[in-house]
Image 1 (cartoon, helix red, strand yellow):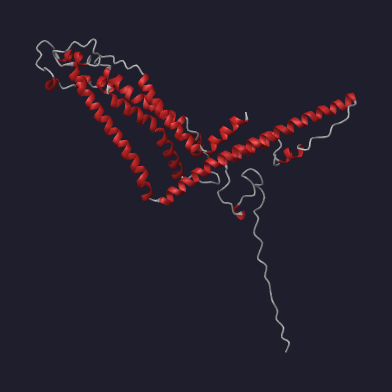
Image 2 (cartoon, helix red, strand yellow):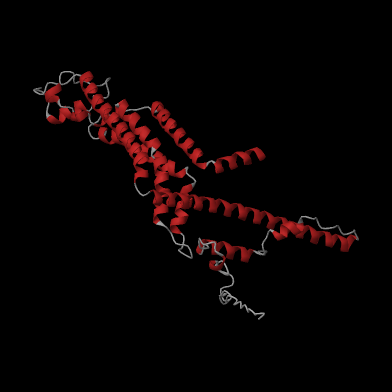
Length: 338
């Protein structure tokens, strides 16, 4: 159990590297999914376009959503966006920085899927086989076929076993033409994603670096504050349970002493330490009020002692504000010996 706890703490302390590893694994998984996927074009004029574009666009959208789901910061972003204003304002720049960081990682796997799909060429061949220019690549003056029948014959180009339009256009010619266009689009997409990543990485320091540092700092602060709050709540819950269990067994021991005349046992030494860790919150109602106050009215980001509130938004609201004491005046008298 301690080993799993150490591994979990390591992942928490290296969350950025962990999320980069998750994105890389998802990118590799997307390529393996595509290679294992059995692509079966329906070879029908009304369904080829929907099937081809669906295979090209729907899995990347699912992978993009999975990239957000697997990111632990998505709940933190939603909580920060939806929380009440309270004594701490919300900075839209910090929220945009957090969302853009998660979106960049979530787009890796979809970009890999689209690149692999376009370079393979099956989806484009299935989706746009009815748009092959028969006038330039085949025999457009076929006397026995109407326009509707030509579309039906062209829709069977991806299905080589049932294709029967060799007199209209050769199957190999149409497939090579569509695959060439698909691979050209694939390499253009790879180039576009590479240039976009280069521009984001290289041109970002050229703009307001102070605003970027501010957004990154406060996004890290929100993440660390949430982790420390969870750890503090877990420690408080552990101390609360420990004191509650000790009080239960002490009451049972008192009952045994009263009924069977057993000698009372001395309370353990760590009972006082657990009670001190409760910080005065010793009942369920007070704890619920403290948690509600943390959600509704987080303390302001000002650590100066004079600016700290008397309570945390729920205790000591009726007390008058304390005023700083007036400065003391010192007088000095000088006496002459003359």
